[in-house]
Length: 464
Image 1: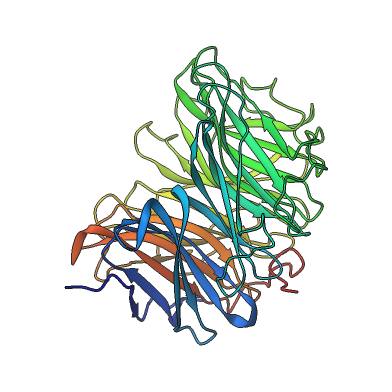
Image 2 (image 1 turned 135 degrees about the vertical axis):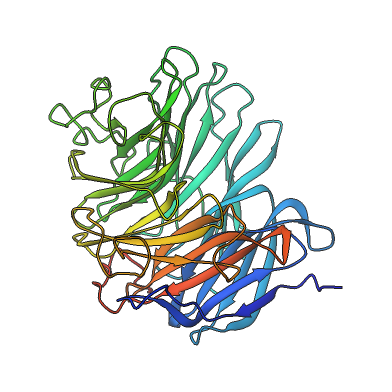
């Protein structure tokens, strides 16, 4: 019988052709066990260490909640340092993770809740994986918006600002059936309490309400600029055409709407000119009745914004990976749709590689049969960066496979993308193996940065 403990395999990951960058030998780990695992993030830690954050599904005797937080620590030499932890925090699911300037690990998920419905669950660990008891007394807290219906609030993303305050976003229910808004909360770094310098009570809500019927607005990603302004990216349902559009919002550091973002001078997409002064609606490709989804966002030191997701703009049925860039004022400056290796492509997360955004790196997945993970590089104008990798006709991507061979059973699902202090992409994803297709596994891979710029060390993880 297989042990319930993690089975960690150190494997050699190779690109498909000679490339400028490659999956680093000895920096690939897979995680499998007797439960379903879902990769959330591979995070950098002080002293060259890193940690894989993953969701550990319910397993008697190991995780008695619907979902637990799994942590697997990796030493500076790339090997497991022998420490793994499973944390039960009364969560229905684990959604996202990040790390602050002190190497503290922040994980968010859907708290099971009680009479008030589901709430945002936020847990902070010390760099060694122990509970950070300075955060809400025991390392964990919840956020309840309580704005209507069943008061179900579902967290989707997390970021930290330059002061290590924790910014969490998610979908919050309003009074009308089917009505949800962007919910944003900021927690103090010192103690995990709601930061009342943000919107008066530590919480804010943003709505788009595009159609006359179901007014569903759902944030999926958040990023915080050096100046403390918060960018939220998600989707909004246009019920008049039964399609989802990309919805973007930016708040000032005090929680007010940033009217300088997409004001009257913004290059609006057709039909959505009334959504402005801190918000904008966007669609990829041409104006037709297709749906778009966005899952990742980043902000450069010059306040440029980049978003990624997937679009059905081509034929309404086959998704393409999608990326778009915006100036500080919200004006769209570049866009690209990427079909991937065999169609059915999508991006999950994105990072500016440096302060000015001269290189942009996106992570996702592709194909309908054997699946691949994609890590693709773009120039400042979002042209594919030729010779970054050996995958795609542009040679601008690395195609990663979790199970070996020509592809995974799929559907592969990329997790978050982070960069370490040397600009090396830290990738994580979830895949199925033909060895046992009944349980999902986690792939974590560090990628080289031999040719690219270094990150903005103040904005990125300059550990104190």
